[in-house]
Length: 535
Image (cartoon, rainbow, N blue to C red; front, side, top):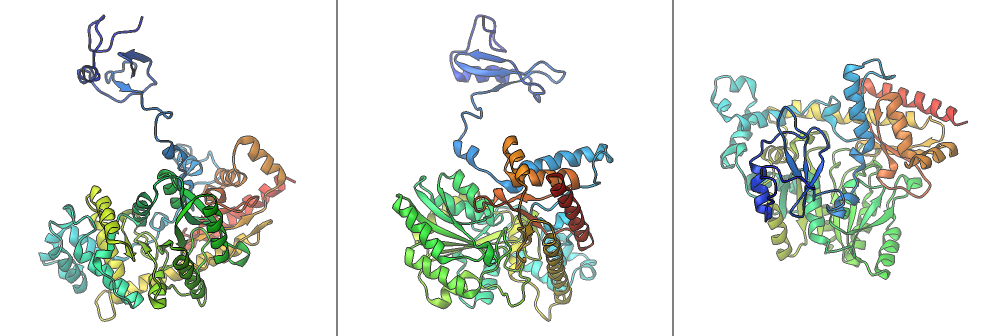
């Protein structure tokens, strides 16, 4: 016989779901420590925890892996996948067993998270943030000695135009004053006007991507052109919202160049199969490739979107990260406006990358050009559901786009910090790429921009067979072995997409300059032993 529901006398069962929940409320609640036995009450499956010193609880198990949204299960995000999870377990184990592994620490080269690897924050940003969070400091005698006058002035201006300070909700698109700071910075960069009503301040650039995909994708027949290799945000959001990723392959033998003929071929093929191609994503500078587009290539992309009637999504979060001689960043908005082209354009920027590296602030913006006003209203509605982006991120985004200028008290220090970070990143990129290119069966294009190298690796046939037998992608198994032998965390190329029968991994060059040579040395030693082991 089935056991009676907890909290009710034997022989009586609740007639409704609500009565079941009334019974639940009579229970003491606690954390479930062990898998519970299953009871069935009035057709509703419940799970009852074993009784512990904390009490007993019951949870509904109608929500199982088999009953949740299939799109959530289909979504993948390799940057924080199985290898990163394993790294977290090893890091915990190292704390209590420091001699268990052939390394003494985990080095997270899997994600562009500069400050986690020792990059110092920009002083100007942090000083303004400190005064905005604690405005009482502005009126103390110590303020003048602790904070330069332009910092104090900037903080007062922001606070005077932000109702309730950093602890209050703002407008859903972001504080108008801060959007004006961003708009002024865009105008200065591009030489074209920017209307604050075309701007959404966001919790990182990824929120802008979610807004776009959520609005564009109606069903699986809607497709978006995405570069391969790509940043997994795009494949993840397309899977989540039920759309189709339409890959266009970057040309590795031409320093990861973008071929417009490939865009045309993929678009025509998709349309012949009944797909509605809605947008083209371009990441410039590239992630994970580090490639930077030249102006002629950008112009060809704009012409293609105009001809085909596609929205251009310009992911430009690495616009400050350019290292190759002769390379300079030009926004797609400037290219479009200079050409007089008539296309819909969504531009994304973030506080997480560049020389700023304020990942945890979750600041960003989305600027829309050429959008129908009714669609803009729907996007505003999406932003309203989340109330507003966080205030610290909004402030940093404003400061990024309106930094100190010559003559300001903070300018010299700001410029020195910026120049030092970017120069160091350039040196670290060269050290890493040069080291990778000395390895057997490894080739790596120069990192022209961004924060990553994406080497191609030729893996032994025995290793590939071992990986297939283990149910893993060959490059994923390689990366797992690298982690287990060196403590270095990288991301397999299979998580970003790659041409069939090629294998890669993505690594940042963000470890401190004093550590990057050691990272290269460890990878070199591991790779030599790895290759020798399969001879």
